[in-house]
Image 1 (spheres, rainbow, N blue to C red):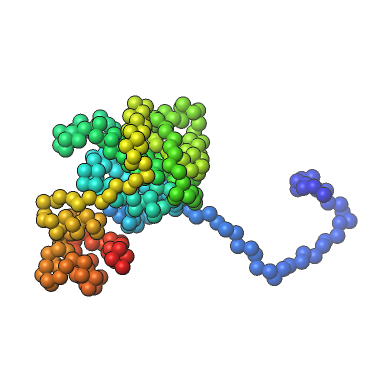
Image 2 (image 1 turned 180 degrees about the vertical axis):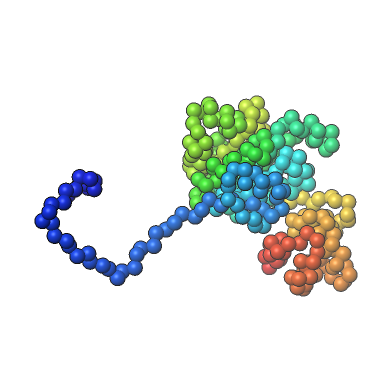
Length: 316
């Protein structure tokens, strides 16, 4: 017998009531999908929370060991363009991307800022657009990550709103071959070009990532081509899937501080504080860390629970 609408069922006057048989079996619990809640790192500026509110996106604050914004398996490191420059110059970006690519199945690098904004940075840091493109190509080549280089943080949050919910439960193989799909243009221009809405655009990008390809999204056609050329150049130089060896930074705070900062992957000020404390107890820094209780180490400015846990695990 097929399904009938209630309006199609006719009840005659001689119809008899049939007793309803009740069951003592407990109802089956339905699996409810996890809500779309964005996780924002506690060290992110308040403007990111304000943008999440603007997009009516629920969020919680947490401290990431790697990354700044995430939802389930999709976690991204957010860099303003000048911050990316600084991270590249002190080599911190390579360590951050290395940890990010190992700790999540959908690692992402969000870069906000236009290349035109580098004119001021060039005066301040002697870092010009050509060097920036080379640095971006190096990151693309060395690590199996998705890169979204957009004009501002508003576009980053819009991506979090429309894209991350589609990727939060996706798992792709970490050792998959590095393949790339280049997209050029800001969100509105791509929607217009493809004659789609936000949802359809996000689904298209998500399907590319689900298939195992890394997405490189650049806000401008010209710089997209430049980034692609830089990627090919780095591959030609033999840097494909070759994470950069950790270098000893020169902070100007002493050789011991530089070694500790580079080896433990911590900020220079924290490294200097640990060196000073170890010297007072006439111990090496490693021995000092291993012998000291957590509450003492957490007393050093810049040492949080997540950093301390990572250092403890690193030292065994």
